[in-house]
Amino acid sequence: MKMYKLITNYKGIHKKGTIFFVISESEFIGVKEFVLQSEEVWGKIIVTEEELGYNFVSLNEKNRFIGSDID
Image (tube, rainbow, N blue to C red; front, top):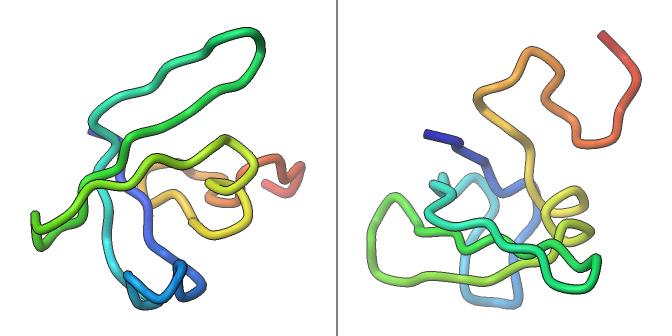
């Protein structure tokens, strides 16, 4: 299961460091969206691919920064 860690406070709702699980991915007319569930299981958020890359870091991949070319 894909996991992401929040690296900035998100809209005053979730604090930096909160862990999220990806529960759904969708793409419609070139816009990719992700539904994330917090580890505390009290709320879901929907983010675009751009927001995911800016506000989150992957906990699963070797290269944790989305869009980064650094290994």
